[in-house]
Image (tube, rainbow, N blue to C red; front, top):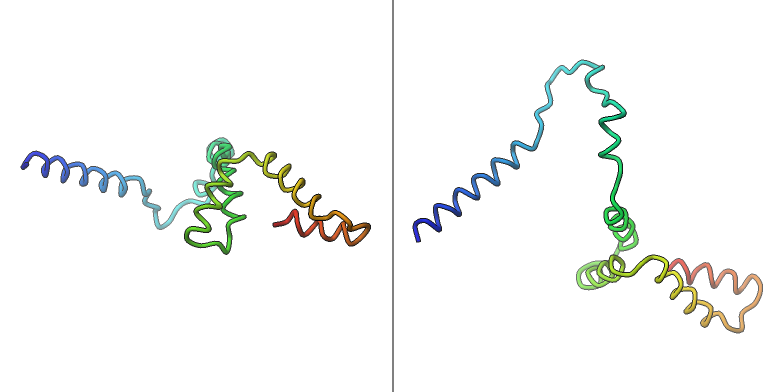
Length: 115
């Protein structure tokens, strides 16, 4: 029992210590040349993986949703491919737009596809 508590406390101390070590300390008077990052240094940080891009897009689309509604939306958004979702949306909107023509159909389809 004592070993479990000791190991847990040690693990917690290591995790907390590494979290503080990850935050770089900025000097008060940095030289202007040193403050500007080099293009080579900022390039890897700027590239996002496909999952990160997908997460950002889904997050934007989920604005205004909360709780279980947001959770369900994010799950659906992150699991389905964008093209599948768009194709399904087009099928649904086309079926709903039956009987509409011209500008009325165009306006309806625009609104329907934004949802």
